[in-house]
Length: 350
Image (cartoon, rainbow, N blue to C red):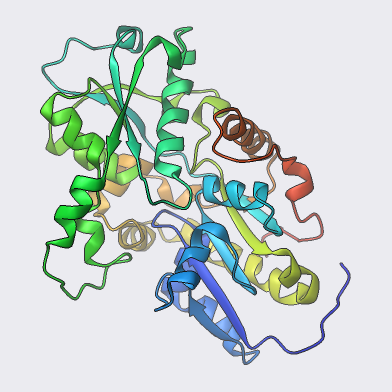
């Protein structure tokens, strides 16, 4: 790995999604900050910045000297759009990916979806509409199990404009949750459309999906997230990408390696501390331990593993090809060329 370092690294920016990641555990434990404080490098959160341009880097990865661990769709979109980033690790934590309908519906199986209305989120102002992409991906993968195609259904756009307008009427409150108070009425227009009967089925994933399905007594048509074929399970969160900007990797390879080491350290700790890890994951997901268990399993702590597993690489390529085919990204990408081959992803044996 060639080093072109011209000046000391003063600030490292980080961001992660509200999902199970080793980076999230490391940050909550304070280990990430400690590791870089030793090198007199200040750690700053992208999501907590007062600057909209900096916050947007969570999706477009335009901020120099930054690391992101989270959903792969925004990371793929940024790279396909010309942003020079590198993947320094992939993590795979299987989660529920539910196709849901109302309890009083006559839709009981995936085959019953033929000619039905499927609600798809439409986020008009999103930098990359990953919610829409992951919903179509989950639907398409589920339909493959019964030899149906997305064109066999009617896709109904569920606009979030009305909910966002209502959201703006809510009083501002101080909130220490990951995304703040706004997340508590996160604009899930497809859920509203399903309850009202404007659509026949929707897609949701993760702890949020498990709780919504329970609270509204929704019928699960299929949990494609538990399918034995990993390609059919691949979506925004399977796998998740750990990425840095390419210039950072080139100029500060030791610090890039330190990021990976911090993630691996947190994952090793998690494997040996189930109860504590589940509490941390609940906080990361803005949920409760009950729904973390429901979404990720009682062994969620064992699913935190960052590596370059061949299955993850193949699945990430398949997801990228899907995004190009559905016009979510402007160009096809070669995932293997995106990987940072010089990074060591061998966990240290305690």
